[in-house]
Image (cartoon, rainbow, N blue to C red; front, top):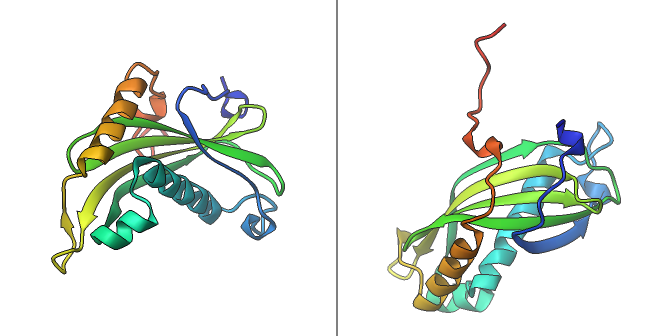
Length: 168
């Protein structure tokens, strides 16, 4: 199936809804690559809030999430005004890190882009940033989401490496 017809499985957490804003449209007349990064960053922040790592927590505990790795796959163009939602799936989690997959989906359910991230809980309470275990209430929510998402199918895109094929 070609990417333009790929329907997204709505089975993760719909974490964000928006529209393609005029300032996100580039010189090619569609959403610029930078804007996908903004949308996925906003979605990751929305998930932080769902977990209890909100602004109050970040201020009071001097802790947050750092992005260790991130990769975006562009599947289909988005144009100004297009309704968007981001579905988030927790692929794995441990005491300090989470591995997530986000899908950018249009109103018809077509997957427009994928974003895979590894995020780490970091405390700055001692001055320099250091990896720190999630608080118990956050770990419980994260583990529950990971367990709920474990049976979901994983897109083959997750197994693909970036690079050029040796085949001419």
